[in-house]
Length: 103
Image (tube, rainbow, N blue to C red):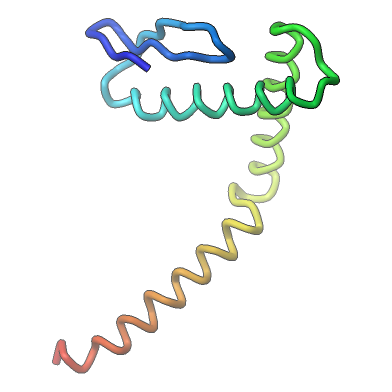
């Protein structure tokens, strides 16, 4: 993925696209393009969808479904919530262990 003054060139499903974006949005754009490329390749890999356009539509529908599902559940998947709780527990434990040295 190339960057220029006018935007970023991304590669999605073997095709390059020049996308204009603000510097502050480049990382998010690159991540979104990589995610779309991954989803399209997964769909294409099933052998059930033929053609780039159909593959893109199916990927878009799947991604929209994921978004709506996340919004409906408050924004985080159960797996992400569990990982977040685990990390919070570890942080709390580390802070408790470190607390005597802070006094």
